[in-house]
Amino acid sequence: MPEPWDTQREALGAFIRARRKLANLSLRQLAEMTSLSNPYLSQVERGLHQPSVRVLKLISDALNVSAETLLAQAGLLDGDRSSATTRSGTDRSTAPGVNAEAAILADQGLTDEQKNALITVYRSMLRSV
Amino acid sequence: MPEPWDTQREALGAFIRARRKLANLSLRQLAEMTSLSNPYLSQVERGLHQPSVRVLKLISDALNVSAETLLAQAGLLDGDRSSATTRSGTDRSTAPGVNAEAAILADQGLTDEQKNALITVYRSMLRSV
DNA sequence: GCGGCATGCTTACTATAGTTAGCAGCAGTT
DNA sequence: AACTGCTGCTAACTATAGTAAGCATGCCGC
Image 1 (cartoon, each protein chain N blue to C red):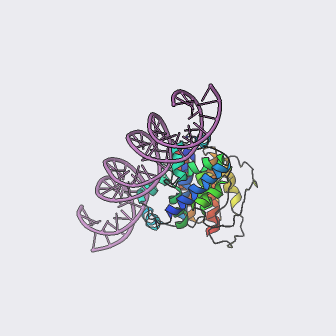
Image 2 (cartoon, chains in turn yellow, blue, red, brown):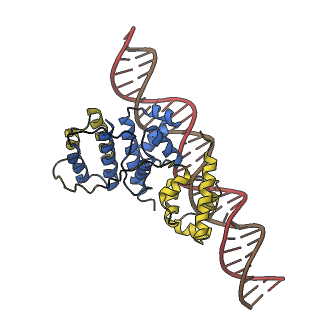
Image 3 (spheres, chains in turn orange, green, purple, blue):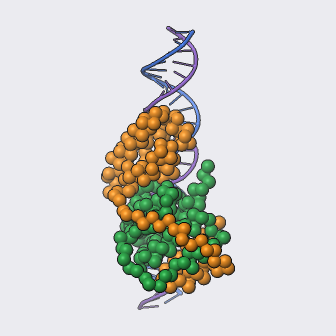
């Protein structure tokens, strides 16, 4: 399984380099825009490194490329899954006084196991702030 | 500038943990499925590390979560796409979600990213029964 | 000729992603 | 009680992502 990653990196690097040249940017200019170092960008473009998600996003922003495109080049998004795009602004009612745990427990669409899992996550989130 | 990355990692980790528990998998089981080490998965789920693109894809495959969903949780894709677990059709007549989602959104102990993650998990639970 | 000032690249280093070995707790068996 | 066998987690290590300093080339004005 650790096979196709080399070519993936190469393809991603070539793509980034092409986009950079298309925008008439030098390595140093892109480096400054992305708060990255220019040698590293050079290495990424030549396929010597696999950039992290953070770096990928910085680059996609700087080059005006959609993150999806870059990810597809990076091999993460293989094909295309239909997306529901439920950007729901549907309910903004601020149910005041009802706490989240109670609402989860009262939910009829979840099994007990699911409720437990969800509440575990919820509590771990609270703990971490 | 390593500012919002902490919360991003936490939200991503919580999301992964929730999906894993939902699938009734132990850390070791998921580790074997993804060819990763179980301690590392543990650390990722607790937000101590930011997984790479490669790891993200392995996890998304193992958990039947679309890569987009995981990436959105990781903060790369800004959009909010609901996860399509290749199983859509089970419908539930009792509209369960409104109270729980509202309660989560109204919770003052969570950041927006965390709320987002929690609701995504919640919806995927509803869909996966 | 020389001196700046770009370009991309190499080397040597630091920070973090990821692994291997092992620990502590909990449930079920005999 | 002690023994399995499971759970998640900690610690110490290795591998790789990412940085700082500097090199080599090419181009332009003097």
